[in-house]
Image (cartoon, rainbow over all chains, first blue to last red; front, side, top):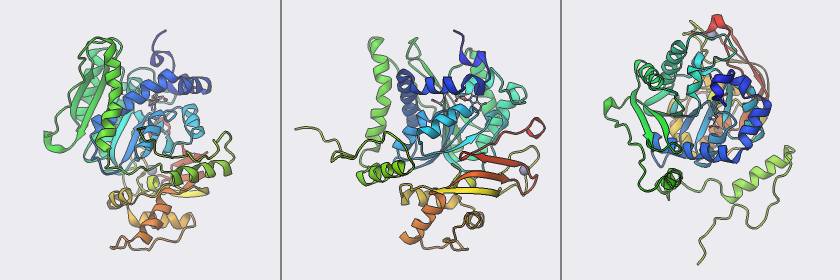
Length: 283
Length: 123
Ligand SMILES: C[S@@+](CC[C@H](N)C(=O)[O-])C[C@H]1O[C@@H](n2cnc3c(N)ncnc32)[C@H](O)[C@@H]1O
Ligand SMILES: [Zn+2]
């Protein structure tokens, strides 16, 4: 099967059926979660401060759920109504916008503490949206320029994406630089077919003082690479340990469940004495 | 789910619309209140980014009159609670946002604003 972005414009490809299939696929959930944790790690936010983040091409909110869990407030934009619909059903906390990122953003200067984008920007190079649009370089320019303005100085934007060639990587990086970003490409597990992941790690400000982070390298046999990739979550947890209070405490979960019930959501689990209880290690 | 926290960051992005394009004006709106978790650290970090007059004006349009016209210097708990409610708990579900300059209409349906531009409006 050829890649999704070769097949149809995003809002057609991610129609009702595909949006559900995509979101309910446990393998996809796992991979998108791993990459979100890694992107958050690369964002390098101050550990003790909840941030306001932009999720570019947020889809059905698989990354957004992790941003919620980490105590951040976020805004998500996506061009596929069916994906946003699923995000609504999943009751993510972020504000959602129907928006074609190739048309640029209207956010005021310095609005966001950072941005993430998981498996999205290859779309800007390939299939057009069915909305009237211009050439890929023009769309990239509009996208990066308005994004750069919307971010605080200093801050970062981290994109995981699937380029098909070095030329594409080149085009994207040069357009980002023209828009004023520093930074560059980070490749995790460059020698592994399966675990290899490409991240574009962009910096606003910092006077060139910000170093492009190193990609993760395999240490042992090929099989261990994926396991190590998943460790991003653990590393992030450790960094946050003790600095962030447990935001989803019992009182909060009960309140939220009650809210869902009142709004007629079905299948909300009954409360038990275990609800929201901290899981303690057994003796 | 447009809340005032995002409305306060949002200007019109239509082609050539670069001045007097903020804040977008609400029209025919329906709101829903939903509790959100209170986090004073987040509010303190966000406060310097707020366009205060626009926030007060927008909150009044949505029927909330709890914020003072001038941004207070003392950030006591009572004030932060009010700010929390205005920024994060009032959801605009239906209606539209209209650019004060070019009058582009951004419709809101099911809580999601449609920011798509027509070909001649793309910058
Ligand atoms: C593979 S999905 C990833 C979704 C989400 N980031 C995740 O990790 O689950 C790609 C998403 O990019 C969105 N997308 C593609 N082109 C876009 C554009 N021009 N503007 C906004 N979103 C776009 C699609 O609608 C789709 O939801
Ligand atoms: Zn305008």
